[in-house]
Length: 372
Image 1 (cartoon, one colour):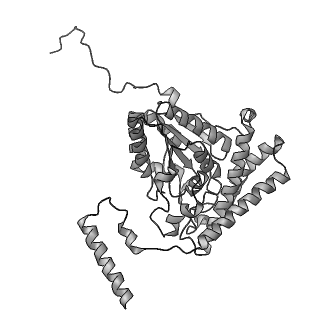
Image 2 (cartoon, one colour):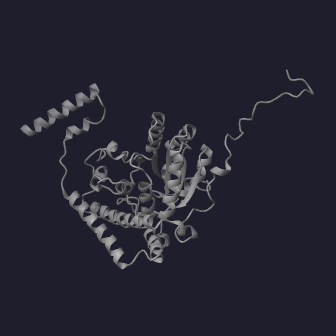
Image 3 (spheres, rainbow, N blue to C red):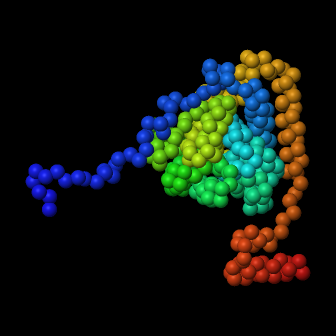
């Protein structure tokens, strides 16, 4: 029993911060490089590399969108306007690292070296994934929102336990931050200090839902401090800035300092997919405002000012992008050879009794159809 006038020691309060929150907070404004004094330190070769990937990425988006109108693709979620974040995410990773994309991030997969026809396999509807994830170190494109994030944490944590030099970079949209998987992934990653980087491409809308109807946080990057990791806010249309911020986050993760949450503020110029009518929830004036902040135009302005870009080089880059698009068209024109029995091939390492029964039933139906 506590006695009057006698001091009793109390345990540490449960609310006491385990880490200093100040270093974890993002900058009040998105970090920029192009058009600022920071651009003077940017490597010219890197800027030219980013420019070439941006132009190729824009052409890729246009070609894939056209393929939906030709019936070659069932659906395509474009990243037109978001190419800077897509390209930077691919270029900051080493060969042994893993990329965990969402359904919108086919460009990031292509920029990492994946065959564009294989990257579109899922959206074409002819294969479960379209490529071997282990071969390319690219996880399957995730259509369910944010489910790839806990997978990225698990892979990164397992790699660290094994002593492997691996970093996982997980991509998600602003809409995915409203999913439980997002919060679970960040919490586990911070507690375990897993070598993982979370890249949120905040393109303004989760289909038709604007960000203001999803969160009241100062920014999505501010959510990082609640889990004990740094949050970074970056101009998602500034390829040099995104590359710099992601490079730092990947270095810190590789060095054992744990995860980082990066919010790239960008804009989805096209509709959610080819099946969406964006005019129902946003006006043309808003879109045109963001066209003035186009990632390709920003990079061209910087390179031209440095004397690194002229009409001849621009033409060479665009011609290369056209050759890339032509190869994609040719590859997509070839009808895939499909085997219905593949439905049962890659579900479990050892098929369950139920799957074997279903496979036998389908095989019998196919044989009966051939006999008829």
